[in-house]
Image (cartoon, rainbow, N blue to C red; front, side, top):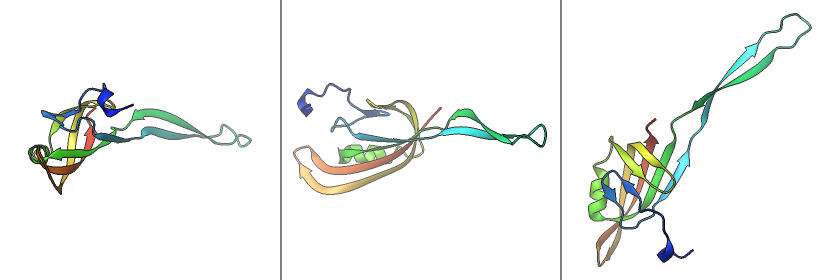
Length: 124
């Protein structure tokens, strides 16, 4: 698929819409379970373990890509905020745990370029 034919919706974090429309979104998460040992009724039985599913933990996300200085400045101000994430992989409220913006030292017709790496936690 060529990038010019990409029909995914443009990603958004809070009020920020990205100039480079489709940043990478990495996911990590796990389920929760409780293990119970069932004691034997008599000495001829063996103890067994039963796993009880308890749902899942909030998913962690990492959003990364490139942007311009104005967007990098706006991203820096999101630390500690709960904002809405709209991305083709996940849409919903997220807590902005950490924002890292790094200047690339590159200037083009739209301004200075930065790379960003944002740690997010799903709000459930």
